[in-house]
Image (cartoon, rainbow, N blue to C red; front, side, top):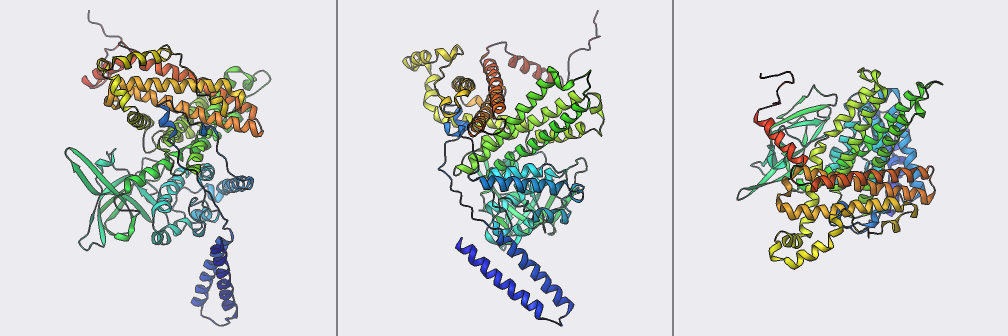
Length: 639
């Protein structure tokens, strides 16, 4: 804080001195006047930046074990039921005020009609409201926000038609420099991006490549050892046309061990106008998607972002936060849909047709509202975990946010179409437009189906290490007869779908949530039992049991979201927030739904021969054998 004050004082003296020079000069050349004016504006802006600097001391607690991964072991960290919040009331007030002002800015006619990030005036307006570089240092014109504050601002940004471009820029391009670039790179490239003068674009994906070990974009050290030579192509690059810089993920080393190949990645900052860089827009998308080609592009060694060969760990950190950003987008879209749906239903109400009073409409709206409550709860719980604990492992949790929230927004758009009826068929109808928007987030860099497999595999890898000795015994029953008898006795209640509920979760939330907390305990116990059974049956081959993995992932999603809802509702009721009683109802309702779904999925996992999974497998095999749909036409006859 002393350093900031000293810098302010020094800059104030320099600014006053510069002003005096400008005022005392009576006969200077026009070019000199322009130069002075430019320097004065620069100094004035720097002074304004320092004037808004506030001290932010946010000490984090020691890292805790991963929450969702431990659910497979039957371990429930009750700390997670303490729903996160900002420490000071003035922080909450200022955050909400700034988020509302940003939303108003984006709603102005000259801002609302912008359709590309190439509009520098649009970017500079955002910069003036400090809406670029949210987590960047305040001395670089950033806000130095934590994750919860960032999510709130992303909600406001999601109200604009350029939501994809804005959030890709913020969460990937800007954030890669904020988190990993050295001071020289930040000064040269990050600061112009935050002020809106320049724009970056993150180049990660490649055509027909779904695994980083198959990346074809390569970087090799030049003969002078002062540059790197990049060759390759990147696809689906957001903001690729408007960008001034590309942040390229490239292979810099390959380690071959027997038949296993492991690549090491690095991140490079490439000037878009460097020789050998070419780009082409993909016309089939409303979003500004581009293919970027690199052919013998020279990149200075000082333009390597972060440590050389450490790109994979940097990507893991960036993708974790990027997945989390799907939450605010989906929340903003769903709120917008529900608002329009309310207005449309109310407009149709007459004395003879009280549509909003019918059970059919109210129950559907209630279901959508509960899902939206879950989306908000799980997004800000995950952000809070990342804020509260040092280097918290939230890889699985952020994947759950992405999968649950994107699916929730998609389901809401389907419900809107059904409730609106025939008018929603029109391409000009708001329902149709928002439905198209929600489809994109189901495949945001990765499909939700692949996301669920990732969730389950990550959790089983964690559980497999912890249960290694136990699974060895279970897979060799004839050599461990005594252990098997004792294990069967302990598991008798689990086998009868009547687990012992001894986690005592109600002690950490409001007592009136005792019933829902029991449902949550039931889900945790069933997942623990299913984990032991699946690992003992399949061992390492569990990674190939895709249908079972998907069901476990769905169970984990429901449990994590139910945990977020219970913690949030309990906090709201205890501190007396408006409508807290209805929040308790929504949290209870979600837990009931979660319990029913988990019970059904675990039952399906344990079904023996003749299960639906076997039927699916046989039908799918026949489909590929005959290269398509194989059943004879219903009108076919052979006699």
